[in-house]
Structures are given as C-alpha cells and as structure tokens.
Image (cartoon, rainbow, N blue to C red; front, side):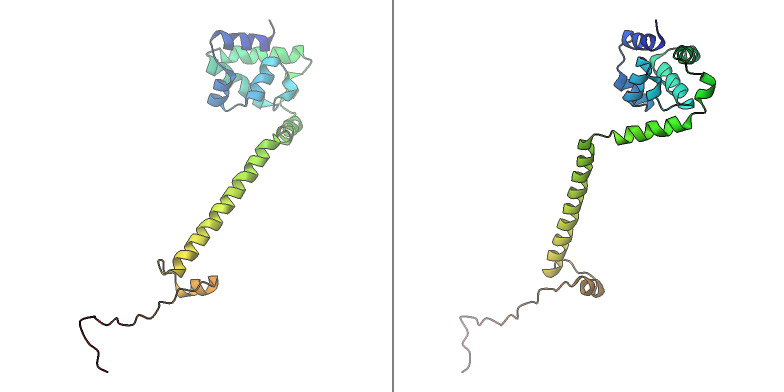
Length: 170
C-alpha cells in the first residue's frame, strides 16, 4: 500500500475527518489532501512537509517517526531526493503565491462588502453625533464644533404667558 493511501486508510478507520485534523493542526485541508494523494509538489516544501506529516500522525495517534520515514520513502519512490527537499525554498514561495492567487473571487467580494458595511456604519455614527450636537443633547468642545462646522440649534425666546385669572395693566 502506498504511503498516502495508508494515511487515508488509518484516518478513515479511526473515523477522523480531514476538517478535524485541519482545525486541530492548523494545516490546510488542501495540504492534507495533497499529502494523502501523494501530490507532494502541492505541499509547501522543505521541513514544513515533515511537520505536516508529524502533525497528521500525532492527531491520528500514529507513530510520528514511522510516518516521517514512510514519507521519506514515498519521496524516493516519486524520484524526489529527500536530502535536497529542504533546500527548495523557492518552491515554497511559489506554492504560497499559487495559494493566494487561487483565492476564490467570492472571498474578495466578501471583504469588499465588509469594508462597505464598515464605511456605512462610520457615516451613520457621524450623522447621529452631528444630529445630537445640533439638538444640544451632546456638547462637544467649541474648537471641535468649529472644526467640524457644526451649529447648535439656537433656543427660541420664550415670552411669559399671562395667567387667565390676572389682568394686565393697560
């Protein structure tokens, strides 16, 4: 049985989902799937790959050293020299770039929506503050009011209302 197939079989035998491993180890599901499928070129590269194998094995209750040895042997079977695998940092950078470039456009739109909502809340908050200042509910320092060009509502002069029972002198 191939290395990746063995990992997957042990994981499934124990009833563990890739999402569970990803959440606990902080290794992306994409990298875990690449490991099980033996698509090693999709992994970040270098020492990170051995760390992913160790984290996977630890979470599933497997022997970490045995799994790392199996990973090293699988690399050899795929024609990859395990000694030079650690030197390939350019591959890691390319994989990171590829992962970012393949970001779902809906995610980008979601962030645009979050920014628009934040801006709307900011404008709404400033409008409410300006209204409260104009109605003399909130008092800001005079310099701030001047800088913001806010004018307070001027109180209307109140004239005394004569009592009905009293007469006014002509």
